[in-house]
Length: 99
Image 1 (spheres, one colour):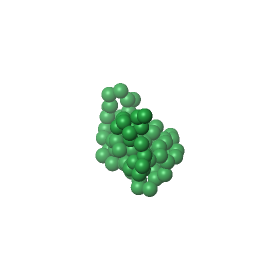
Image 2: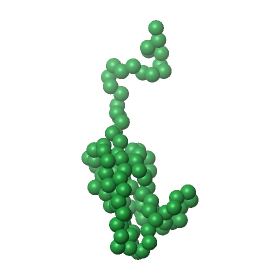
Image 3: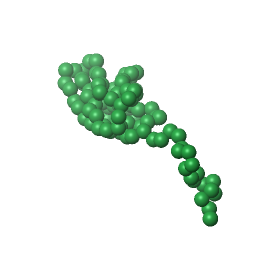
Image 4: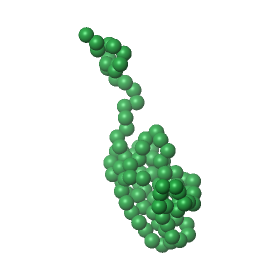
């Protein structure tokens, strides 16, 4: 993963040699470690990734530890989308802006 997608399943993938692979990140929690292989990815381990509450938009490290070796990459967390349409905002496609 190189970009966290809000309101969608996110999965971290790695190709690990050695026992007990582990993902870590200050912005993500990991669960459901699953051994591969995975179609379309050169990986042999995956884990579900969920955003930690209160995480701000930005760039964060993602680390995987495999058999005593540590590998780190970065991923981005986009800003949250507006959950509610502001009061008085135009509604696209409803004809309210037609003149």
